[in-house]
Length: 57
Image (tube, rainbow, N blue to C red):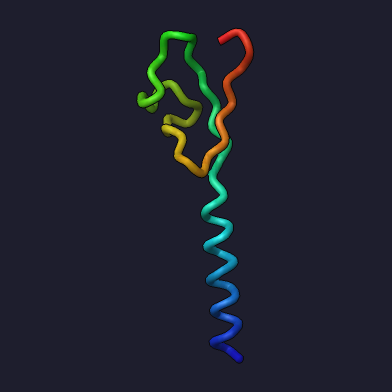
């Protein structure tokens, strides 16, 4: 029973960590995607992240 509960907790934690974040673009049209400073929080988005680019940028 304890092993089953630990396995369920482990699998749920994997699903939570794979969801990603919302990452917002903070630079105008001439910025480079690969530069961490062009994103809020200084992190380049990954495949698991959702990207927000405000209109007019």
